[in-house]
Image 1 (cartoon, protein in one colour):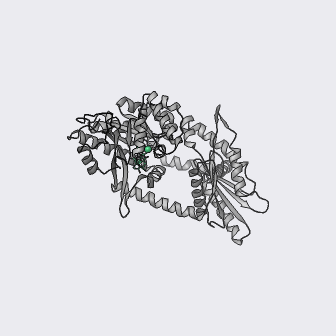
Image 2 (tube, rainbow, N blue to C red; image 1 turned 90 degrees about the horizontal axis):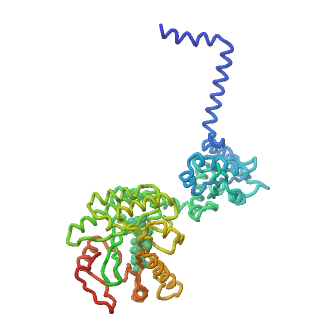
Image 3 (cartoon, protein in one colour; image 1 turned 135 degrees about the vertical axis):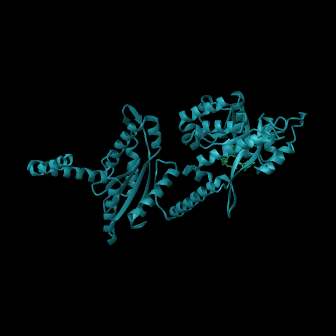
Length: 482
Ligand code: C2E
Ligand code: MG
Ligand code: MG
């Protein structure tokens, strides 16, 4: 019987003492291997999350007497994703390996280290008499990262953000302590990265508020609580409306209408901006289509696009689909990017912008002059328009510096044959300055605040216009929109 053969074989083997030894050795080795896998990270050989927590819990138990203090440092490499995407995961892994070796050089045998996952590492420092304090260790970590890493011929410089929490002052259990260190680390990232930050109770309050906001935003997406407002742009040569900017608003139940500054940063952080940003593109393209088929005709609309949309989604493909679905000319759509978006993930963004440009979509640089101000990208990227930031326009009629900057941007745009628009125009003095210096368009409360759909349609129908400059006589007929 075949089954007999199968059972018979092990019985003979068990009778063989040498096999028994071998088998036990193999079993022990396998057990050891499994233990290792369960408690140690296979890339760096450092204790993993489970093992680190266990060590931390054991040490926290010793602090109950009140004589020993512990510090937990949570360390996260800054922009590690960029290394992975630019140089590949194998080099990313090598960086983590070298980084863990440098981290080890920062601690003493009394301390513990662990890799919690990805590019996140943790240290547990025992704070006693002569031990260096946690902040000194955090500084040391910054120091050991100064020298570049040589990764298969690629020289890579990285920085890290470090969050620190103390036991027993901040918390006495491992989970809370690490959560607090994580909150502090997040604060260090917010402070511009390459720095460390100690946990404070206020940070916890802020983190809880941020969590609540994120949950409310997720519900807002599911419940369709977002709406698009539109602000007119005015051509200065004839005072006519020549386009609109779409601006997101959140109709938060119980809170009224919320403007973007209160929720866009949170959406950018948690990634929701990608979904909502795509929704704005869809809504605007649908609206352009509806207007086109109505007596209003062709209306140019610009949409703000966040950096994460370029990194995490295919903006060009999304726009292509939305434009086709609504049967609109791509020329009626403009995307506004900030200088920061152009400077991160440059190759991917450049490829997306080139595809958008081929479709006929216009590209403008929002808040121009406030970002990295690297003028090199003006040649590299297919840009149509510069939007002078509100900060320069605000002071343009009052301070010579702001006026000089605004003027320089207008001249720069003119010599590069780009369109130029000033945002945040509130006074006739600002308007006069812009007209005097040949700025093409303006946008601001002086003419109109952003308006909900019904009101913007009324404004477009009424063909409202700024009074044109006295010297020029304008034939208004047919000039209502571009
Ligand atoms: P932005 O794109 O630079 O938009 C201009 C902001 O200036 C708008 O603020 C607008 O309401 C405001 N503004 C316009 N004229 C004046 C004025 O005369 N005086 C003053 N003080 N402010 C004026 P808003 O609507 O609060 O939007 C703020 C920012 O939020 C936008 O700045 C943009 O960066 C972002 N944002 C808005 N909608 C979206 C969106 O759909 N997606 C993304 N990613 N970001 C958006
Ligand atoms: Mg904008
Ligand atoms: Mg702006």
